[in-house]
Structures are given as C-alpha cells and as structure tokens.
Length: 280
Image (cartoon, rainbow, N blue to C red):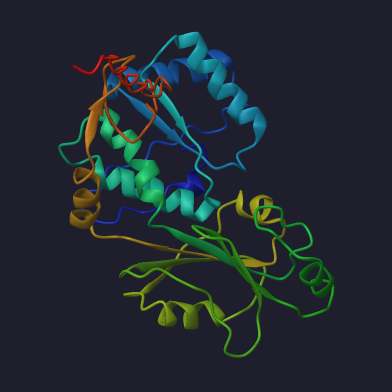
C-alpha cells in the first residue's frame, strides 16, 4: 500500500500485516530504493495495490524504483475501484497470502476478486463526479441545497437521487459491508446494508484519496465484500491456472501481473482443401 489509511485492520488471526510504502514522492530516492529492494529480498515478490486516485508523483516514483531495480518480481495493481474498495481488496489478498498459493496466482487473484466487490458512496454533490456517468438532470439537481445521491461505481455503475424508499441493486450473495464517513450526515447506508442482506456493518476512517476519487468530501463511502477466507480461497483455486509463456510464473486470468505478458493467440489451422477427383 502507498497510504497507511488504506491498510485496514486484520480480518482474522491469519491475515498477513500490510506493508505501507510511506511518502514515496517526498523521501530521497535512495531511501525508497533501499526499502523496496529489502522488501523484494525478504518476501520474494511484491504487489503494490493502489487506487487510480493515487497521486501521480507517487506512481512515477514507483515506476522509477522498479526500473532501477530491473525486477520482474514487483507488480503494480490499480483496479478501477474506489479507494475503500481498494483497501478491502488489499486486505483480501493479505488474507489469501497465508494460504498455499504461488506468488503469481495470489497477485492475479486481485482481478478475480474485484468482481465480487460492490463499492459506492452517498454524495452531497455529483457536480465533479467523473467516475460514473452523470446525466444533465442529476448535475442540475446537485446544485439544489440538501440534495444527496447514492452511487455504485463497481461492478455496474448506478446513480440515484436519494428519496424515501429508493435503493440500489446489490450483490446476490452474502457479504459484509464496510462504511467510511466523510463530511456528510446520513443514515441511509444502514438501510442499504439491510436491503443487501449484509451479515453486518463495520466502520473505518475515510481514506484520504476518497474525496479526490469521488469529487467531493461531502460523502459516506461504502463497500460490500466477501470476508470469509475459505470462500475467497475456493474462488481462487476453482479457476484454471496456467504458466506465463514469458516469465514462467503460475497465473490465473489472461495476463501476468508481473511481466504484463498476455497469452499468445493461436490461430486455428486453415481448413484442408479437398482434393478434386474425377468421378470413376
């Protein structure tokens, strides 16, 4: 992780601790280089999970460090999830890190698990929201004092203006819900957790990157997720594994997260031409 507020508390006693690469763009290059090299030597492989709202100077420093280390054992994973969803996904990977999964399978499991995360927020304004399609009517209503909007950014974009009885389409499987409160007062998320049949609702501080991602600090971010390690493990191990044709590491999915290679496309053989024969 690149921010301490994205490192959620352990889900259970088996959850591996998070490693936070703090202030990458502010510390001297040689210090951050030594830190990342030490992590790679200690663990063998490093997967840095960060959001699309991570400041560009931080991302530039990460790419610089990997280039200087000339390492194919360092991967950067930036799924299209809001910051709270990123924090949840990183914790799920920390849970799975205690299992008998190879580094490539564990790293590529992130793409699979994103499909089971429902992430959204209640916003006081959608005027600066560019992560979800916003119609002109919603833009106009966002200027009305007191207006609030419920948004799901992943897995399917949804946006509704909060009115009595309104809800959002949620997961069709059992989940927990995590809530992070910003500068907005609302109890609507508790009702959403009940509508989504969540096992329970937990709270955590709002990630610092969330206002940048959602375009406002007047918000309450929420995320519905799978918490049971046995379920996560079954999901990952049920997917066919293959070896990356470039670096040889075991992966799941269609791209290696370490070398970014995709499987070669094998064209089917051309149909054999039939021989012309003269009728007997």
